[in-house]
Image: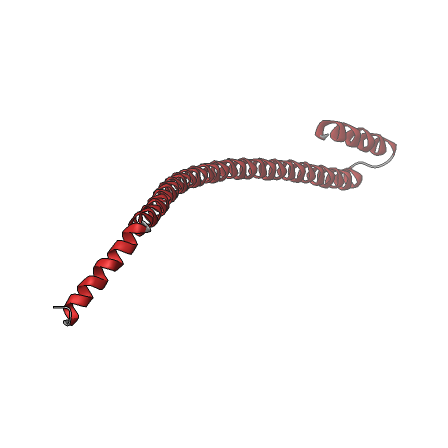
Length: 161
């Protein structure tokens, strides 16, 4: 048995295990494994915390995006209402402007008609005076004719104007 290799391998193995036990290597290995386990657990906890923070930030940004979309919709609705109000106001102003222009044109037309009527009356009066003067100068002669013509012209002018 002392000459067999397996025997000596077994003896060497036992001595190796004895040395490991004497120097308490198994405790050091367990401590190293415990430290590594604690470090991994800490990293996992940090990862969970970071994940929760990221989810909270995502929820915050989604909330802000929703608020911004709502605000944009409200601004758009307000702008549409303002544009409609301005368009209605412009329509009213345009109608008022057209009504004023129409009244001004009608007034100018009425004034032009009145002026034309006055001009026609004046021209008719002058033509009547000229015709009367011509007729009277041919029919009546002398000083009486001159007085009648002057008096008639004065009367006619005062009546027509």
